[in-house]
Image (cartoon, rainbow, N blue to C red; front, side, top):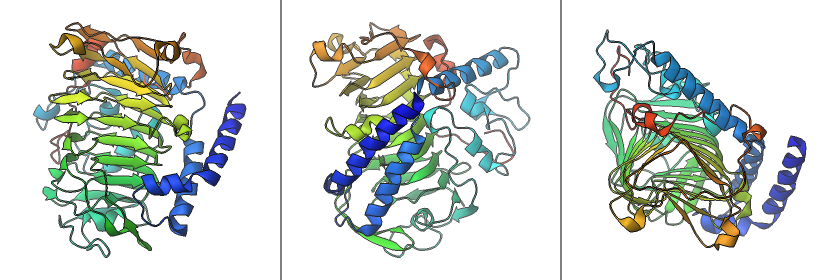
Length: 444
């Protein structure tokens, strides 16, 4: 069965590659879709096919199991005090991702242990684990064509795997979008690092990227121009959208413990066949359209998209799209939805959305109590979409409109789906969402 599914997707993706370069060029903010971009776009599609899990329910089941193990362990071992850790204080990890690394007082010497901790669809992401450390010492971003050594832009365009860390706290105002090469980790533990007041981060047609412990806020669209995107390529870019993090044809991406707010477009957008993504332990505030997963209702190649959204806090000042999904498979597990103005989870073009163990606190507005929103479809159509709510905690009148037949978890591997705990556990599981104050010699 798995072979048959993969064969169908290979045929689909081959057709896409031979017919859609014009669409990619327009949507990708690439003014000249030259041989370089054509080559990495084709490789990105192959990477997406390789990362695609024919049976995603098995991934969600594994995540569910890991949550269960952590909570059972914590019932007998009280370990964590999070941000209030003392040097010799106990450490009690509140979810399985954090438990993997946060209790180690020597985290600064063992930074790359983090690469073993991703769960869900982005679980195979190792970032720059197999490369050297690169220390960012300079917050400037003045030369887009020949980035200055020691800057973040110089680090992210290198071809080799790199684990990027920061010499001190800094605010980086990006002059134009930061276009990353693959096999990179941006690890801001031990410093207060902010991408703010300028352009955002673009992860386009590459794979294997970890973004950890960054503040990203007040991002605006940039005008474009000549920008180095690799050590051996400079491309002319059109105007960017103003996303905090833009995933475009990206594969194996893990975004963890990031605090985001107030970007001109989306906080995180994943489009154009991006897949194998985990977004975890993040804190989102003060934004309208929070997350967009899927480029358009007409872009069927997004059916390979598989995303895990776990242990995040959707907080003050949010309006909608937490996330808004198209085509793919989305596991939304053990998140805390304390604020929205319109709706929390939406979609179109028959995405599969499995909501498990989340807490939804509806706003006072009687017309915004519904968690879900379906766009551009009549009930006769969307009633067949698989949208399920399992173990969610509904408060202040919140309600989730389910649809589709019975969700069959047996067709998915235990690695794909994080096993959820009931929504009553969410405040505990998300207690330390967002950036962490990590001090050398202490648990983080």
